[in-house]
Amino acid sequence: MPDPLGDFSYTWPFFAAAVIGYLIGSIPFGLVLTKLAGLGDVRNIGSGNIGATNVLRTGNKGLALATLLLDGGKGAVVVILANIFLTQDYAVLAGGAAFLGHVFPVWLKFKGGKGVA
Image (spheres, rainbow, N blue to C red):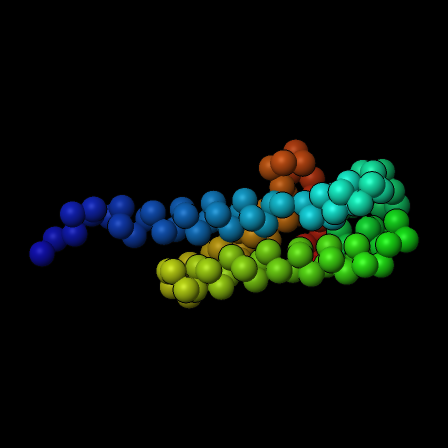
Protein backbone atom coordinates (compact mmCIF):
# COMPACT_ATOMS: atom_id res chain seq x y z
CA MET A 1 0.00 0.00 0.00
CA PRO A 2 1.44 3.40 -0.93
CA ASP A 3 2.34 5.84 1.81
CA PRO A 4 -0.49 8.44 2.02
CA LEU A 5 2.00 11.10 3.07
CA GLY A 6 4.32 10.34 0.19
CA ASP A 7 7.81 11.71 0.59
CA PHE A 8 6.66 14.00 3.41
CA SER A 9 6.72 11.05 5.81
CA TYR A 10 10.50 11.08 5.43
CA THR A 11 11.07 14.82 5.39
CA TRP A 12 9.10 15.95 8.45
CA PRO A 13 11.37 14.07 10.91
CA PHE A 14 14.38 15.58 9.16
CA PHE A 15 13.08 19.12 9.65
CA ALA A 16 11.78 18.38 13.15
CA ALA A 17 15.16 17.04 14.29
CA ALA A 18 17.02 19.96 12.73
CA VAL A 19 14.72 22.73 13.99
CA ILE A 20 14.20 21.35 17.50
CA GLY A 21 17.91 20.57 17.82
CA TYR A 22 18.83 24.07 16.70
CA LEU A 23 16.33 25.83 18.98
CA ILE A 24 17.32 23.85 22.07
CA GLY A 25 21.00 24.27 21.21
CA SER A 26 20.56 28.01 20.91
CA ILE A 27 19.46 28.49 24.54
CA PRO A 28 22.23 30.74 25.96
CA PHE A 29 22.53 29.20 29.44
CA GLY A 30 25.60 31.26 30.37
CA LEU A 31 23.71 34.48 29.73
CA VAL A 32 20.49 33.28 31.34
CA LEU A 33 22.19 32.01 34.51
CA THR A 34 24.35 35.08 35.06
CA LYS A 35 21.36 37.36 34.63
CA LEU A 36 19.25 35.25 37.01
CA ALA A 37 22.09 35.33 39.56
CA GLY A 38 22.20 39.12 39.36
CA LEU A 39 25.67 39.20 37.81
CA GLY A 40 24.58 41.14 34.74
CA ASP A 41 25.34 40.39 31.12
CA VAL A 42 28.23 37.92 30.81
CA ARG A 43 28.95 39.35 27.35
CA ASN A 44 30.30 42.48 29.06
CA ILE A 45 32.91 40.50 31.03
CA GLY A 46 36.25 39.02 29.96
CA SER A 47 36.14 37.62 26.43
CA GLY A 48 32.51 38.64 25.94
CA ASN A 49 31.60 35.01 25.27
CA ILE A 50 28.53 33.36 26.80
CA GLY A 51 30.30 30.09 27.65
CA ALA A 52 31.32 28.47 30.92
CA THR A 53 34.88 29.82 30.88
CA ASN A 54 33.66 33.38 30.71
CA VAL A 55 31.02 32.70 33.36
CA LEU A 56 33.89 31.48 35.56
CA ARG A 57 35.44 34.94 35.18
CA THR A 58 32.50 36.30 37.18
CA GLY A 59 33.99 34.47 40.16
CA ASN A 60 31.06 32.12 40.56
CA LYS A 61 32.39 28.57 40.15
CA GLY A 62 28.99 26.97 40.75
CA LEU A 63 27.41 29.04 38.02
CA ALA A 64 30.24 28.18 35.65
CA LEU A 65 29.76 24.48 36.37
CA ALA A 66 26.01 24.78 35.85
CA THR A 67 26.65 26.55 32.53
CA LEU A 68 29.05 23.81 31.44
CA LEU A 69 26.62 21.04 32.35
CA LEU A 70 23.60 22.73 30.79
CA ASP A 71 25.46 23.65 27.59
CA GLY A 72 26.72 20.10 27.21
CA GLY A 73 23.43 18.66 28.37
CA LYS A 74 21.33 20.43 25.78
CA GLY A 75 23.23 18.63 23.04
CA ALA A 76 22.88 15.31 24.83
CA VAL A 77 19.15 15.80 25.36
CA VAL A 78 18.34 16.39 21.69
CA VAL A 79 20.44 13.39 20.64
CA ILE A 80 18.76 11.12 23.18
CA LEU A 81 15.26 12.33 22.31
CA ALA A 82 15.83 11.98 18.57
CA ASN A 83 17.25 8.50 19.12
CA ILE A 84 14.19 7.50 21.17
CA PHE A 85 11.51 8.99 18.91
CA LEU A 86 13.21 8.84 15.51
CA THR A 87 16.39 7.01 14.44
CA GLN A 88 20.13 7.28 14.92
CA ASP A 89 20.48 9.22 11.69
CA TYR A 90 18.14 11.90 12.98
CA ALA A 91 19.92 11.85 16.34
CA VAL A 92 23.15 12.78 14.57
CA LEU A 93 21.33 15.54 12.72
CA ALA A 94 19.75 16.86 15.94
CA GLY A 95 23.14 16.88 17.68
CA GLY A 96 24.75 18.77 14.82
CA ALA A 97 21.89 21.25 14.77
CA ALA A 98 22.23 21.76 18.54
CA PHE A 99 25.93 22.48 18.06
CA LEU A 100 25.13 25.05 15.37
CA GLY A 101 22.44 26.55 17.59
CA HIS A 102 24.97 26.93 20.41
CA VAL A 103 27.55 28.60 18.17
CA PHE A 104 25.05 30.70 16.18
CA PRO A 105 21.98 31.30 18.42
CA VAL A 106 19.11 33.11 16.76
CA TRP A 107 18.24 34.81 20.08
CA LEU A 108 21.65 36.55 20.22
CA LYS A 109 21.86 37.64 16.59
CA PHE A 110 23.88 34.51 15.72
CA LYS A 111 26.77 35.33 18.10
CA GLY A 112 27.04 32.62 20.71
CA GLY A 113 29.40 30.18 22.34
CA LYS A 114 32.45 28.47 20.93
CA GLY A 115 30.95 25.00 20.90
CA VAL A 116 33.46 23.58 23.37
CA ALA A 117 31.10 22.27 26.06
